[in-house]
Amino acid sequence: MIKKITQLIILIILSTTQSFALIEVDITRGNLEPLPVAVSPLSSDKKTNDKLVKELKIENIGDKISEVVENNLKNSGLFNPLNKDAFLQKPDIAHLKPRFEDWSLIKAQALITGKVTLNNEKLRVEFRLWDVLAAKEMMALAFTTVPSNWRRIGHIITDKVYERLTGEKGYFDTRIIYVAEDGPKTKRIKKLAIMDQDGSNTKYLTLGNELVLTPRFNPTNQMVTYLSYFRNLPRVYLLDIETGVQEVVGDFPGMTFAPRFSPDGKKIIMSFAMDGNSDIYTMNLENRIVERITNHPSIDTSPSYSPDGKFICFNSDRSGYQQIYVMKKDGTNVKRISFGKGLYGTPVWSPRGDLIAFTKLHKGKFYIGVMRTDGSGERLLTENYYQEAPSWSPNGRVLIFYRETKTDSEGKGFSAKLWSIDLTGYNERMVKTESDASDPSWSSLLSN
Amino acid sequence: MLACLVLSACATKKVQNQMQGDVYTGKDTVEYLASGVPDRVFFATNESVLTTASRDTLRKQAEWLRKNSKVNVVLEGHADERGTREYNLALGERRANAAKDYLMTYGISANRISVISYGKERPVDSGSNPLAWSKNRRSVTVKAN
Image (cartoon, rainbow over all chains, first blue to last red):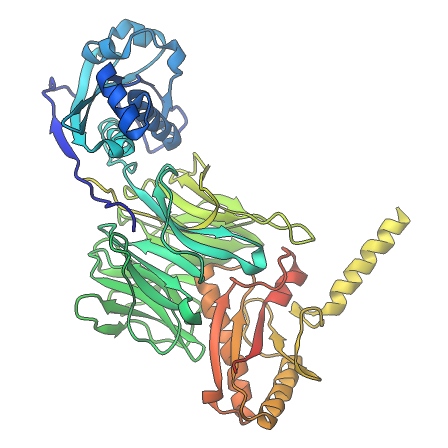
């Protein structure tokens, strides 16, 4: 159905002079002062260029890869890629030995250089990260892969640079699965779609014949669980992205919805609605055993596991209104954790384990926020007419969610778009999609 | 200026005539299963409690179903756009079941009634205002055969 996610990328660590972290990006305070970084175009020889133009119709692959890196760094909000017009040194020479005084003249603190070659139909990309002020090499790596994978090389380079400069794993070699939307608000056509984190390489996984909602990745990014109205029976499905094979999850005599994987990928947790009551269930994908986790006459939905799999946060209106609760994985020890004003929904546990992101509705406004897992330290990151369903980047730094616009008195002007925001509340920005979009779910890192 | 005021006053009055509390009481979107048998009932925000008018409508539906004993129905539960998607799916299911329970107390067998929730996915009014939302918070009885 779509290309293998895990295409082989061989990584070689080039000999590099050991150096200590001299420049560092403070990521706890957001993007107050993004680090000025120069991303030199990657150099490539004429033979490589000619061959790539002929085979892949890609011109200037070195420029293209560096643009991917530059765009990623800029979108992170932590880096300020400098204008290439001001670069004095040629890419190939800079990659061998940067003239640091030239780069510090344009106020670059870090410099990324690289080289692309084609050997035996394989693309070999090497790059170096330089500390301009200390005049030292910080990192040097090379990758070998099939040429069509060139964008992923750009994402992996960004991940390496991000990790070296912030001390935390990156989130650039990742994908977003979401619902692509089209048509009038009263008859929306919805399809499952998958794209790279930066909005490129969009592929559609369903045709739009039936309503589909809330897709979520499993930890290895090969499977997706989602809600489909196939044959007008709303049920949770499991889809293998590589083979395109899909199946209904469990044999429930009513609607199942709000699915997510357990952190080990072995279970799906979801709601099952029967006779006006929704409770939380799990199904083990290996032995198909179904377990009931909650048993309460209220609505229990939107379950999400803690990363160690020991706890579940979920949404319930057992107090009379939608609030967030945490319980042990077996359904015992249920505790309400949201006590602020308004309604709370869509809790989702951070991959770091320390925070729960949520949607809040208060006085006609919708907020995306985070709180600690005991409910303390509530912080609202963004306010809007309508937004919901945050999903964490794999490093727990960024949230992606969707936002809908208000329509006018004639019902016109509706749109749904993906947005992302840093955990600090800075760097709120729209994530480009080919069509309207909702229900985003962030994959884990494709390469580790 | 005066015309403007009169117009806006009229508009407000019209909205008020179509809502009681925040439950829709108008006829704009209503279709009929048979003459005098409305196909839908409306709910207050976040509620699945049947109003007096809703119970009246459902009694008429039950009477019609008793007369037409071969007809099966699907109850389609809906929510407005001012809620999270997953919660609204559950809320739509709860609303449709409230209607189903009432039909059953008036003698309609459970095996003639199926229930489906669309949450906020299928609004009838695409507006972003209280009147539009009130029309969308509904359970619609649809002939299944």
